[in-house]
Picture 1 (cartoon, one colour):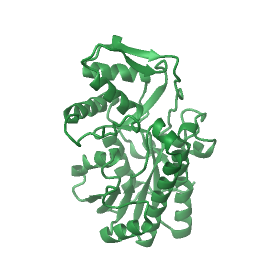
Picture 2: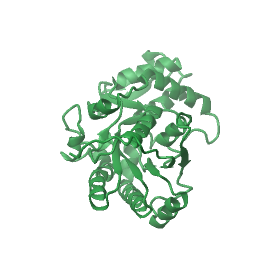
Picture 3: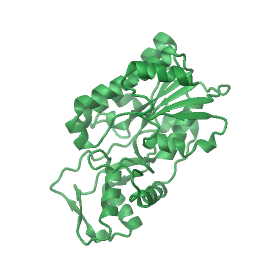
Picture 4: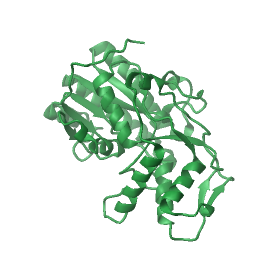
Length: 324
């Protein structure tokens, strides 16, 4: 492993952020006031098609950033991943490669790439360390997205070794917060539950959840994840990828009960369908490397959940405000 060094004398003033309208991008937008000395440019797919190499080169050359934070990715829930595996693999590989090449050609000082804990093998030992990334096949339900994310790891090492580029990789876990994707075929479980409970709050019918509710999941508030990225932009320079998500963990049942309580839904209406699969029981991550370097503190899950639900409830009936 290469040595860790802090960039205390480097200030990345002009920062280009891909995926600017996504969950991580809007999480960073929400906290830019904490970095008054910086200038942020947030890109959406309308501003630049990251799967087109010439567009990416032109965009980076035009903005001439000191640093790039690459949040953009094509992703979705199990239904989406099952239906579009080739699209997920192709588009994510193209985006990652094009960003790295544009960074190299335009001499960007630093680039931060985003990986996901979903890429880890489902049978990896818990808590999952960064070294386990290539220790087995990813979960079949999301293998194409997972392999695209895994390839960021050797890409970082290769670009650092051959071109001397300052590029790092940060691993996010389940992200939630304001502006999440709530579309049924694309949303993660937490966003799907928030929508389902909200839309059925005034009814008397049962709210059915697959499995027995026992699987454990980690979630990180989007603004916390954005702050973690900014800390690493300024202070982390190593080829070793880092788990940076919160390790606060709740079962599916506990999470469902929390959502019900916040929305005023009686818990007795929740029914767990044990005839349906539970999914992976536990995929806890080890973020000790990141914490030992940063001393980072996360927003408690319940607080972030209340913020996300309040935002969803407030924006649900506003056209275009919520991705439904």
